[in-house]
Every structure is written in C-alpha cells, then in structure tokens.
Image (tube, rainbow, N blue to C red; front, side, top):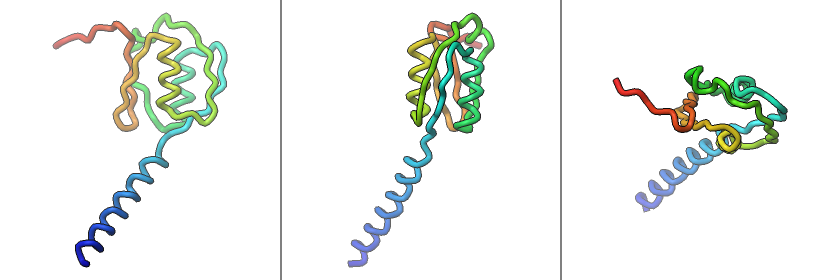
Length: 108
C-alpha cells in the first residue's frame, strides 16, 4: 500500500513538471511585410524573451521577407523563416544561434 501511494505521488510530481513545460512554450504574433531579418529577430526577441546570436556576415545580403503568425509556436515561426531564407536555427535555452545554410564552420 505504501509503495502504491509513493508511486502515485511520484507520478503526480512528474505530471506537474510536464504541464509546466508545455505552458512555457513561446507563442509569437507577427504580421510584417518586406521586413529585414534583423527587424524580425527584434520582434521575436521582445515577445519570446530569447536572444538571437549570429555573425553579421550570415545575414548580410538576405532578401526582405513577409511573415504572418498568429499565436504560432516559436519553432514554427523559425521554420517559416528557414523556408524563405537560407538560415538554420539552433536553440539552447533562451539563446538561438543563427547560421547561413552552406556556411562552413572554421576549425581552430
């Protein structure tokens, strides 16, 4: 009986953690036309409390893009951007690294 009670208590704790993780997902609202990637990054940073990190060369010369997102998850918005521009994103916590597709990494 004690083991069953203990297992139920542990499951309840993990269920609470899972729910907290789901509610933490960032949703983005954007409606921009002919915007630079920097303008889009600034808008996303303000809404999602994230920081984009990139080399200026990675975004130089990119076309302006249009994005409309209403309560979309951050991941979906980044996929939308990747579909329009040759960029890749990798998130670690609140930092999002940005690289250009085909950009070779330098080895020390």
